[in-house]
Image 1: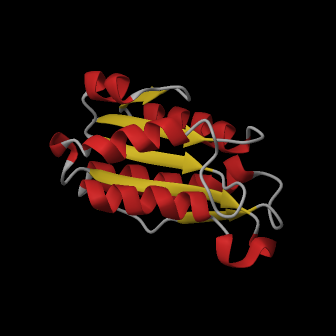
Image 2 (image 1 turned 60 degrees about the horizontal axis):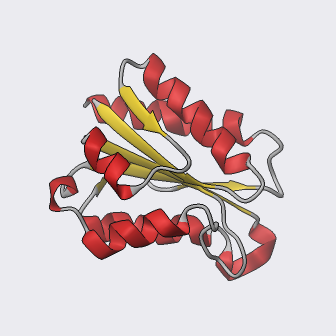
Image 3 (image 1 turned 45 degrees about the vertical axis):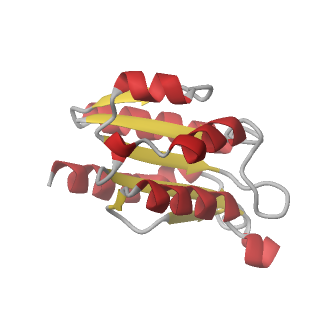
Length: 151
């Protein structure tokens, strides 16, 4: 299966989680596209059969600047070919921010719903105030995600 990973990161943690996810998904036998600077055209050329978004949250619950352009491109087009594909979201945030905790992930989740993607697992929320190893903390969820892709 061809899995596209999109990521948004402020300080690099979400990008590291996305890289780790890329390796886990590849090790499971899937073809993976992960490019933190991917454009909509890059994604469409890859012809994904599943999606994973990994994003941190910035400001008042917003997406990081490096994911904003791709998010907007996808939202403007809403490619019909992606309707019904499986997807999932890993969100990084800090629970001390209250209502905006993992807001970037929530935005990606809403976009996936607008696209008609099928959420195969509930969004994983990684709390920076509780974890020092988000890559390791994401592994059980990623194992589940990979198994649900194969189902």
